[in-house]
Amino acid sequence: MRTRTIAAIAAGLLLATLTACGSSGDDKPADPKKLDDAASLACDDFANGYKAALTSTARVDLANKVNKWAQDSATNGIADNGKALARGSEGSAAAWQLGADAFAQSCLDAGWKR
Image 1 (cartoon, rainbow, N blue to C red):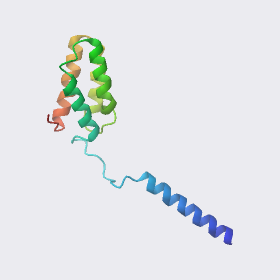
Image 2 (image 1 turned 180 degrees about the vertical axis):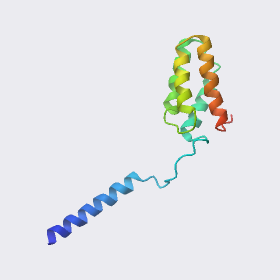
Image 3 (image 1 turned 120 degrees about the vertical axis):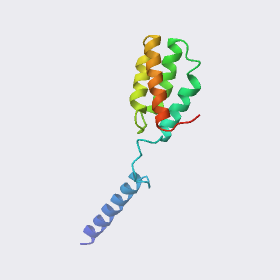
Image 4 (image 1 turned 90 degrees about the horizontal axis):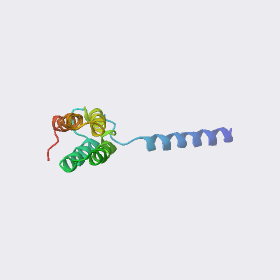
């Protein structure tokens, strides 16, 4: 009987520990219409690097930097348009411009301000 009691207590403590580790304390889901932290960082990086991204290498580097954050965002359009930015960075100047415009618009739509 004592062994079962100890095992039950140990299992309960383990479950409580695992539950506490998996909880962020804020169980509310992110509002996809608002700028989350990852989106804000991606938009900041994009705005800071866009004018200097004149070569295909610079565009790819910027797209990679932006997507480091964008792919972790739950904000509408940020992850998808980050991918479009990456595809455009490897294409023509027109493809880059389309991707850049779409990404910038998703930042503005989410409320990003410089």
